Length: 115
Image 1 (cartoon, rainbow, N blue to C red):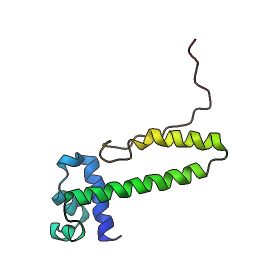
Image 2 (cartoon, one colour; image 1 turned 180 degrees about the horizontal axis):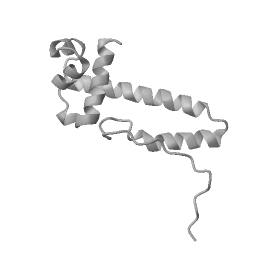
Image 3 (tube, one colour; image 1 turned 90 degrees about the vertical axis):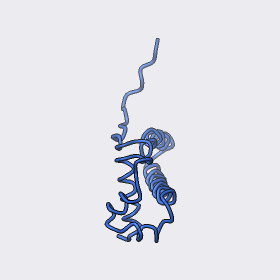
Image 4 (spheres, rainbow, N blue to C red; image 1 turned 90 degrees about the horizontal axis):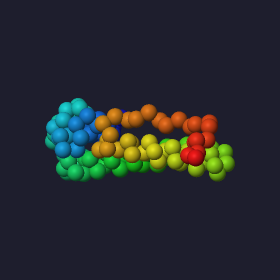
């Protein structure tokens, strides 16, 4: 694993544990096992580091989403999968959720209608 990948992994972990405000460059460097000086060789500041981590998470989310939707047979199943992904997507960002919520499950029964 490259130093950059270790830094980005450490950033995501720190964001999930502490949030953006309390995540520090020193924490990330320590978690990644590098010095702050070495971190700054890869990222000029905290904003660049956090931005790169969020971009990587976003790209991973969309790669996974495209693969999961493509595996579904028929438009109804693809739309269902997309809706399920959108419901769990808000917790994919380390800034919005401290921990990942469980994946929603499909219900085999139709929702009850209000009468």
